[in-house]
Length: 370
Image (cartoon, rainbow, N blue to C red; front, side, top):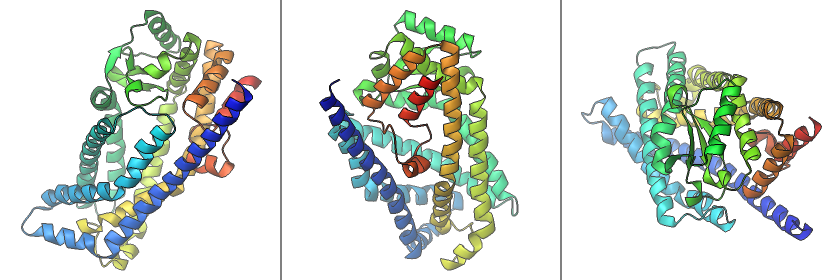
């Protein structure tokens, strides 16, 4: 690659990254503003009272959430459309047609609504039965539900968006299966998905757990990377299981969930009075609860990112130790950075708030020093 091409790529990455960070910040601020005004102007109370009548509370909740979800989707549509469709096409990272994008949006909306409905129904059910320990019971339920969801994602959710097939390259399949055995991991099989129909980015994952655990390779990775590069990518994913990182991540996320609900438990009375509520059980107070969760997520995210970066670094080290493919690791990182327009060396503040993986340059420097 000539220096001019490198300069062009660096400028492209800088513009893309700056826009992504700005849009992510705007998205959060916009959500909080909408929630605040929806609550503060009494719109939530009006909607809840309009639905109340003689309906049971467990019937009101799905209707309330449906209306709020629809309203938010349309209010957020311009930002979402620009962020997930126009921006990706502008930087040549997507070749998806607008109707295909919209179909995916509808499917994602339905899945998101069903998940939210289950969690919120459970929240109000538990809240009404455990006066002083509801925050702990709800946290445990959310954690349990996330584990069930992780098991179902590769079986139910991913096939809604991508076509699965067992990888046809038997040499690569055997290498990956042998690597999994070497690292003490049992997998169902190695699958590839048609990533290229939607995005030009590359990715790979070890999805599911138990009998649903499988390797998933994007065709954009399988077709453009060498066997060594693919193997060291998967060695990194396998290392997370070998080093029990999944358990540690679940533990960290569980603590974050518990802290969020405990904060609501201890301080929500003041904010409820501020908006004219006497109890969290009032469905009209739901925007306040969501604001709590969003804000606590913002506060806890940097710590979660820091822990995640440490785990990712350890997985990189093990991947290179097990495979001995340090050169392939470096070349793979260089390719991924260019293909995904990754911010290789972000500002420390950006890294602090946004990066749950070490930046590319840090990962390459680690490999070179290993």
